[in-house]
Image (tube, rainbow, N blue to C red):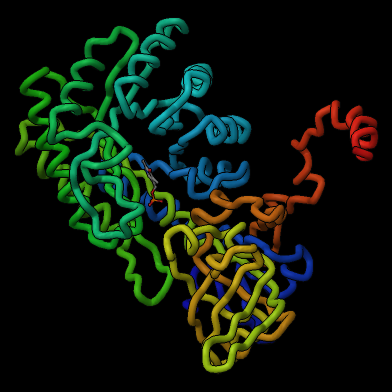
Length: 448
Ligand SMILES: *Cc1c(COP(=O)(O)O)cnc(C)c1O
């Protein structure tokens, strides 16, 4: 496993993150445990902030869907980033964390009227409108509230980034945004410009996720600015800001070669800067929405090894006390991860094994075929790069309580998400009153 952020191996041969011995973290907080490296998370925020605001007129939005808690909101705010939220729940979390609402951008392909009302009520910075139905609804709600909603329109530029099929979103056949090529994008822009309670500030696209090919962004810039020039010719309107979404790839395994954030900024923002005058446009502000590349590498999950089952000549299954409940990505996308034994981090790998979760699903496998120093019950397994789309996608399948999350820095560990209890699992369960009355009827019927 590649050591990232503040990871190191201490003199006991244990993995350390943020100056904390992960074996002690497992003892003190239990497993499975999400560990978030504060310094690394903040450094990732800062890299984006510097790359896009020092040389360019840029704005960086952290994509909350990858990892959002109250403490995470506070860090994002302190690092000067804005926030991209996609639901009433994320919006509410930001509000409760006292995140400045003018720096909140509200995404989603099917926002409800209640969510849009909440966004207007909170006075979010922008609503990222996805489709004509939403545009109409927002215009009406803004009118009722006596305000003008500032919006950006989500478009589908038809740029295909080289990434896994399920996380491609820029191609034409997509549930997100309005297609440029077939005229629907132009149509919705004209509609937006005609609405009284809507002010259109710019255009948005998001070409996919876990992208390593920076030229995809330059290509998206070309398509989007070319289209903006067409819009200007037809309507006289031009975008003050252009949002190119997120998508920068991160290191999960040795197969991944992440690009630097400054190279990303130099490719995208420079392309926009160069292209705008060529297309007769005033250079727009460049917005980006990194999620995975901010939170992903900063997270590690700790598990305790339980049963180790060898099927001679086939494989060895090493079962851990979590799995698809806390990390659904391998089951959803066949995602790959690296791991090491945190309590024997300095030992050489001896054996190829596969890491199984504890859910009742054959597909609940965290890692196939990984070389480790012969795992035994009680060992602590650390899986790296789990900061993004793990806690945020976690679930209670099999009624497994969701893990706690600790924020580590300079040898201190603070709980930022408490571990769920069994009582949390039944908190919303309701037994109909008639079930209690029904007891009599059931006994009465039993003799028949
Ligand atoms: C998911 C998403 C992001 C973040 O993508 P990452 O790959 O995590 O950087 C940004 N913008 C939009 C619209 C998204 O859907």
